[in-house]
Length: 259
Figure 1 (cartoon, helix red, strand yellow):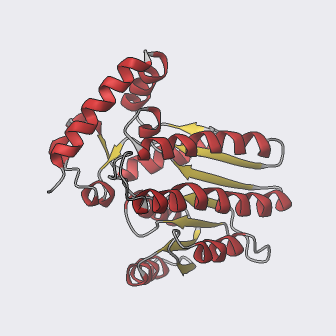
Figure 2: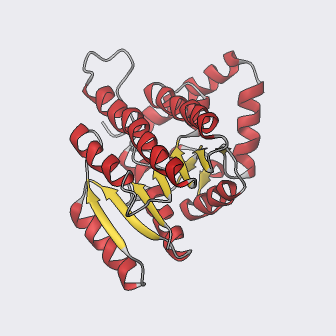
């Protein structure tokens, strides 16, 4: 039976991936910080007949990242699909003198993605099969501060990884969601009313589209026709226009945040 390891697996897009994969018959390794939620999610999947392992890990802690990487490299318990999903919004301004939020963001959404992708990729190449999904964002195509910069890195990193994996039987795909109705945006203080309703996506629909793209060998997946169209305009339009729109969106986000 195939096994998938999902980080940030107890909420949002990560939980949607876990649900979708369990429904398709996959066994799971769930990685997150909240042990109680991990156990609750695991119990639900086990009741449905799936084999589930839980790894409590804070991916801002390098020792925890090393533990998860070691699990990915175990050849006697192979992981066939890695979903690097753990992440969070970065509200700290680029000019902030306090670097704590930026440091944590880099650890979780840059360094951990690189370390875990590398561990999974090495093990998968030895077996001649496997898939890696790194969750980026359409924000990486625009200019909304540190989060945009980090997610741009995720896409470019994954494209480079895909080049390195060519011909090995292992694939890598960057998933670029738009705004998705999950706890992620609620925690960031972004309400449904603060952004146009047409921009919001359903997490389960998003993951279904991502898994279709993964099966087709896509290197970059941007689910939904509306986001494909928007990202076409972003890629081919003038960067000055992208910056203006990004500035307006950033201002709208800030106005929706609690004091």
